Length: 181
Image (cartoon, rainbow, N blue to C red; front, side, top):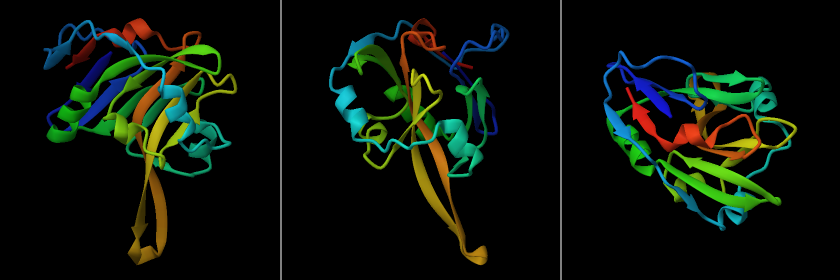
């Protein structure tokens, strides 16, 4: 998996192979051969999250939340996430990067973790499906913010993990190596 970030602290997580040739860029960090760990408890942990009736794209369109910056979609599936990469949260994200496999609803699923387990599986978080097939999901923490001057509040969605079934548009092999440029 490829992550890029710049000197201004802006980053981008590529959840699908973009076809970009990053060979001209210098590695800042590389974590090759990330193992896939089996965790049969993940299915029950997913059941404890909020399961909205709307798909991710619908909830975003209806402004149930806004994104931190911009998440790119391909046919409703997240393909990339733009985010602020401050030093400490970025370090924590890389340290917590894990690949897990589990059985859920009689299918093989994978979980790509970008945060600590207690942060991902917080019962306050939301599990948004990306399609009617329910073959891929994102786990998001929705943080509320109120603008006092305008007496207006909104929620910002922060991406925590990607969950996908083997037959989804995501490729588990792409996630087995973490490369930061």
